[in-house]
Length: 358
Ligand code: NAD
Image (cartoon, rainbow, N blue to C red):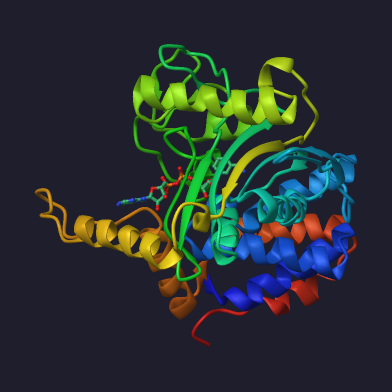
């Protein structure tokens, strides 16, 4: 079934309010998740809410948290999210780092101890809207590793995403946002929930053999995701762990901290004001000259059109604004179930969700 983005956002706000988030936090998190759905990343959309609810119940994710802003050292800003909702804490931390960048033209942010920050591209978009080039490296801890280092049959780090955005006219264009695993873990969850097989190459079974079955990996964490691009992607994933975890966040998966339902992110972000290099108009003209050059280059056999990073997400968003967001029935039931355990009015939530086109 396809649902309207607005109605999914309203339902998400109700569910988050039942978790104890105040109006401001519920709006920030609901907006973040539905934007991820709109961008085509259902793995990081409203389907995350059951996990967040379980974390709140366990006391491992704290609604309405106040982050701790540690003393800045030059252009380095450190923010401890104290296990607050990552989407909210990350925006507060970025705002704080932008104040530092106003003095130095650059800021380096370490956000530590944050609940799941979800779709990293949202932060590149946020920074670009405020005129910043931004680079984000994010590691994941609180549960065992998920991704096998190149050559290993056993997971050694997590899906460790990277996002980079460059502002043109106040939007991130182009914008790269990618897990360093072949696919994000949420895509294995979505395939499992839809009863679909996964392409060979995404997951290794416990014997280190490629498998097309998502269920063992999603339900029992048996096996490992693969790193993208063989040894090169594996190397990048390792450096994301080192920058976000060993340097900024003070926690890598090697520490071995395992918390039931725990998923925490550390984020190492570099913010740059482009005007520190040249006037904005000249920089944007050069970005677009290069962008257009790539768009107009000849296509490889079997390819209709060349897309730049960020373009697929913009197209998904336009399509999903028009036609609604597909959410599988199992995910809707999971949302209602978790809301029910917080004594939310599930009939009201069910009625809030509107089918697109009706
Ligand atoms: P993906 O593979 O769908 O896309 C990766 C990048 O490739 C994007 O920038 C996209 O614009 C670009 N792209 C896709 N198709 C293209 C094409 N045909 N031509 C040119 N460019 C193209 O994304 P992913 O690696 O599966 O990541 C999914 C999401 O998961 C991301 O939003 C990421 O931030 C998120 N994530 C979050 C965490 C976390 O712990 N918070 C961990 C891992 C991933």
